[in-house]
Structure formats: C-alpha cells, structure tokens
Length: 422
Ligand code: NIG
Ligand code: FE
Image 1 (cartoon, rainbow, N blue to C red):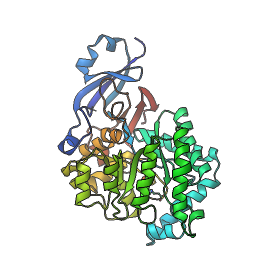
Image 2: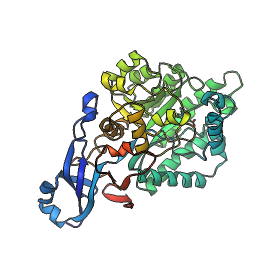
Image 3: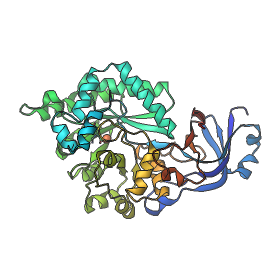
Image 4: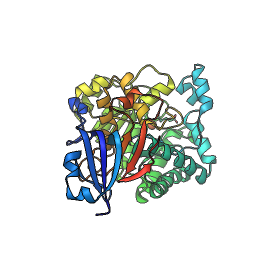
C-alpha cells in the first residue's frame, strides 16, 4: 500500500475529537493522545490512536513513515476571517496611530479602508496575486491549512470581481484551502460619498448588480457586511445579507467592533455562520449568541495592533455557552498578521482563554464558522489529514512563546506543504 503514510513519534496528538461545535467546558477538551500516531491514505485519516495501536495495523507496516521526533501534532489552524487580497501595507497610518490618531479619525480623512481601495484599484492582478501568494506561504509556515478570504478593497464591480477571481485562481494553484466571502459592503466608496443618497446608491449597486453577479459566477460562498459607525447601518446590513441569502450566499458579519450597533442580534436572526469582532457586545447579545449556532469569532490581533484596551469579553461568551472561534483578521489596516500562534498568545493573555480553549477556538470551532466541520478542524478517521507539527514539548508552549515561530512543519491533505524547519 504505497500511498499510505504513517505519522509517528507524536508526543502529544491533539485530536480535537468529538461532535458538534465546542461550547463552555467542551472548549477545554483537546482529546489528547500521548505517544500518538496517525495513518493517512489519499489525503484522508484512516486511523488515529497510540503508536502501539496504529503501528500494529497491517496497513501501517507497508506505509511510508514520517517520524516527527517527539513533537506535538494538532489540526492545521482554520483561520476563518482574513482580508487576503490587498495591494500594500498601511504603515504610514501605523505611525499616525502611534502618535495618537484613532482608526476612525484616519478613516474620515480618506485613510483607512479607502486608502487600501485606492491602492488596490491601481495595482495589477499579478502584483495582487504575488503578494497573496507570499502571505499564503506564511500562513502555512505558522500552521494554518485553511483560510477564509474576503473581498472588500475593490468596491466597484470590476475590482470586486477581480478580487474574488483571484481567490479562485489562488485556490487552484497552491495547497491552502481558500473559502471566499463577498464583502462589497466594507465601506461606501469615495465616488459615492459627498452626494445626496450616495450610500443608498451604493447599496443598490450591491443588491441589484454585484450580489447577483457574484452568485451566478459562483465566486463566493458567504456574504459579509462591516456594520459599524462610518460603514453600514444595521438596516442596510439586513437588506444586503437578505439579498445575499436569496442568491445562495450565507451571511456573516463584522459586528460591534468600534461601537454597538445591534449587528450581533441581526446575525443571530439571519442564522449567520459567524459574527466577528464583538468588542462592544452587551449581555443580551451574549445571551443571543449562546442560544444560537452563529459562531462568535474573536479577533484580538485588531485590538493589539490598534493599541486598544477593550478586548471582546471572551470569558463571558464562553461561560454563557457561545461557540467561540479565533482568527487573525489578516488585513493592512487593523491586523497585519498571518500568525495564528500569535493570536493564541493574545487570546491567553488578553482574553484570558486557556491554551486549550484557544486551540479549540482556532481549529474545530473555526471549521464550524466556515461550515466545514465535517471535513477539517479535528484529527479523526475520515477527515482530511490537515495538520501542524510544533517543535514544543507541551501544547501550552504554542501560545506561551510569542513573536517566534515554533511551527516545524505543516501538512495539507497528507502532503507536506511547509518543510520541516530547524
Ligand atoms: O476586520 N472592520 C473592518 N474591516 C477590517 C479592517 C479594514 C481596514 O482597516 O482595512 C477589520 O478590522
Ligand atoms: Fe475583518
């Protein structure tokens, strides 16, 4: 059986086995197997257990062996919120922020998202693609095997379709899975501002032209709206997401990041896959999330990068029973990082999540946020062999070390996509 692969020598195998998304105390259960092994055939896991159990299988004796040398193995991270395609950094704004300007002040002066829109429209598709390719390699280097990617720095028909087309091309040419989200409702573009009814005209463009085109070309699976002060209102978000739903795009939302708008309750009412950020949720919002299947995706990289003190109330969300996930929100304005391990470090020190809770939030609950929990997010028989090997003795060291990369190798569907380092 030459196509089988035995992954052996695993000191701690974090299987994340179990059913359904993890809530409450179930976030702490990593399903750890000490001295574990995995058997993989055609990219799928065929056996998981202790090395004694797995190595005793007839198929294991014929398999090619990959000994990870006593390292820790876990499911590849599922980064369920990124803005992959953008043309350049916004380091110039970073300096202004450090000097005291707020994110919203910068945005009001034409910086912020509009700054990235200007840069993207002027960039060639080749340049955008090359920048994204480099980022994708970095995602893999930090242990990520699946990402969600949003449009939203184009904000006109040609540019938005160009971004979504790049998601598709990149999916086909490199190993990471890219789940595409249409975020035409990121902000109102400059050409629609400063004239009466401009925002409404842009919403009409989204409803009548962009959503139908995106759906008919099957360029996205999800539709997202940035619902906040300075972006879209709750009422506009509702119309956009309902139209998306009508065209087969599942809703997700940027909610309560800068101010509380009631977007969380809207997300729950619409049956959104996730609502993300949540720094300003109130008790009723937390209760609504806890009773729902909408994932509460926390993005502490944003607060860290913007130097904000108010992080999302992760403990309250977990204790209430919400499905908590973690993601990078990789983007040039609020969270320029591809590192899920760094996000885990922030989740532990700033959100007061335990290392086990953070890992669950970054794997199986992230998969659930992308409605892919049947294929990815845990290491169980029948699932994809998407995994990360960390050069640590104990899984808690993954968030414990920060600003350094302890990911040793990454595999997607049983193939090494990031070669063993050091
Ligand atoms: O997720 N909040 C809106 N969108 C991004 C930031 C976009 C930007 O500043 O470029 C976010 O934080
Ligand atoms: Fe975002």
